[in-house]
Amino acid sequence: MSKPDKQYFKNILAAIQETEADGLLSDHRADGLSGLAGLKTVGVLQRLARMMSADETACYLEIGVFQGLTLVSTALDAPGFPCYGIDNFRILDPNAENLSIVQDRIAGFKTDNAKLINMDFEQALESLEDHIGDRKVGLYLIDGPHDYRSQLVCLLLAKRHLHDHAVIIIDDANYPDVRMATRDFLLSHSDFKMVFEAYSPAHPANMDPAELPKWEAGWLNGVNILVHDPDGLFPDMMPPIVEDRTLYFNEWLTHRLRLAELAPEALALAEKVCRDDSESESILRQELLEKFQKDTGSFNNRAQDRNVHSSDLCPSRINAVCNLD
Image 1 (tube, rainbow, N blue to C red):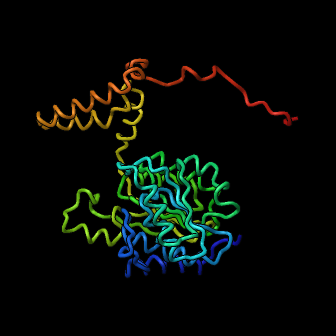
Image 2: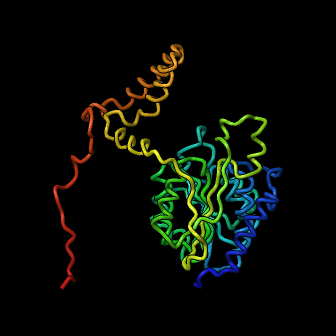
Image 3: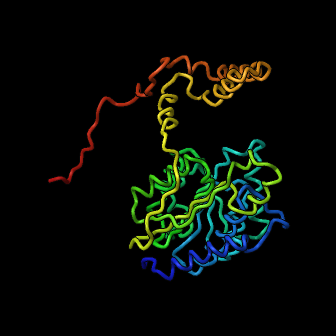
């Protein structure tokens, strides 16, 4: 595969600028498509997929399908371009309905080039060649779990599968964990550069309802766009981060505690205690106790602090090879 040249990058930037000005390339919402992505995010995927569709060595891949908005929209605007979506529908699916919604939409829109990989994203990335064959990922949307580790793993595990002309779209870049993972990837992989970033003033859940449509028509909860730039044609451009790393240190302090899995419920309770909201405090206290009771045995088998989960690990081992001589 040839390296990306200046004209290729001009085309990428032109697609981003056109999306900034015009949003969606084609709008399929009236036909039943819906989801959580900003419409400009969908629009840039449509344009870039159409641009790459003539390359028989490339494909589109996304982590986090939800209800199929980005997967089906991208597949519709680049017919014949293989489009793969990875999701095991473990989150954001309280009624366990998203798998059937995605399957129905792929069938209903007759997007034969859209394929769902119903797996955990890490397992799928580790064995991606089993699903995409000899193709390389030319366009890659990361929109799965937004914790720091998951974001970084999505970048690291996909790297060997990326096309020389790869473009990476990182959604929900408003989250500091997402931006930190992007920054750490860029710092350790100098052949990738960020070429575009956009953010909104708050998470959509916390926006004034009157303001929400404006951001839904844009990049919604933020986006970072990276390109493979082996010749260093772009200068370094890093997403802004929160300099105080206390939250990251707190992950270690939390994970080693006996009741680490109860951290979200404990923090919700702490919020009401600190605000002297006794009515809500009582409800959340009961919810915390109920979750504790469900896994009491596991919790009781741990130390109060500094759980390292190492009791079943081997004392030592060496990687013996036969051909060192």
